[in-house]
Image (cartoon, rainbow, N blue to C red; front, side, top):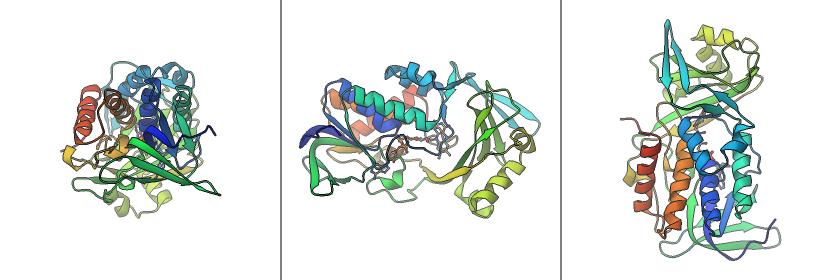
Length: 339
Ligand SMILES: Cc1cc2nc3c(=O)[nH]c(=O)nc-3n(C[C@H](O)[C@H](O)[C@H](O)COP(=O)(O)OP(=O)(O)OC[C@H]3O[C@@H](n4cnc5c(N)ncnc54)[C@H](O)[C@@H]3O)c2cc1C
């Protein structure tokens, strides 16, 4: 582990795409950055692994797109979605890519390190943010407790309920469940993302090809539907896929293991995203995920880049910075909250 000084410019809690994008941008601009995560990297993440074109653009901005693309599978710039007899297309302009999050997130953390960022991974770290003044990160090193004083901090720990002061179900939020596995031997065109709405369309299953022979397969449903279907992973999974027989048939071999995650997609208004004088939330921690589709990597990347640029230009985190991030995400990606 590299020596960690007692004072640094920016601390970032969470090394997913939001935290890593901020770390890359800040470190390349010459700021001293400490990027921490409680998980050791590489680490898996329950996700569809699909990078939409705005996410790909963000990777270009971070100059890591080429490195990601060599490890990824390119898909057409559209999602093919099927509902009963209907077959439609949601268009994106350029190509999208599908890459395991384990790979993507590790590449981003590597890029941050190469840019000069210090990382502290696989260790619980506590953050203290007094009402005024610097923020502190503290961790146990066995024989002693280490503390670093930071001019400011970014909370990039993913789910909003893990961030400061946010309740599990913020007003206007929708609690969702996402499940995913990896299936081999699927019988579909590998150049498309296949997406199947279930029931009234607020739930869906997907098959996102990662090669000609391997696909990320998943299901997304609201908490109400989850509980109505019995609330047990395997049972919910089977019921969801049974409702779209053609999708089930396409992955006849079935996924070997299924992981699932409770995932609050929140519809926060700007004023509701928590922030302080010297800290703010980015990415999933700021509720930045599309409430209908669950797309969030693009929001994570762009919010990380924007927060970093804000700090590089001399701003401090806070309500104005949060508003700037939301504006940037709306411009680069589009609306992120449902009515
Ligand atoms: C089932 C499912 C499918 C999805 N599919 C897609 C998809 O196909 N495309 C897409 O664009 N989006 C998808 N998403 C959304 C996407 O996964 C998230 O929007 C994205 O991961 C958010 O990135 P982030 O960096 O904000 O947080 P994360 O990727 O969640 O990273 C947060 C990091 O913070 C760390 N952490 C948490 N708490 C602490 C703590 N207290 N201290 C230190 N570290 C901490 C975690 O270990 C983690 O590494 C999906 C989500 C789910 C649940």
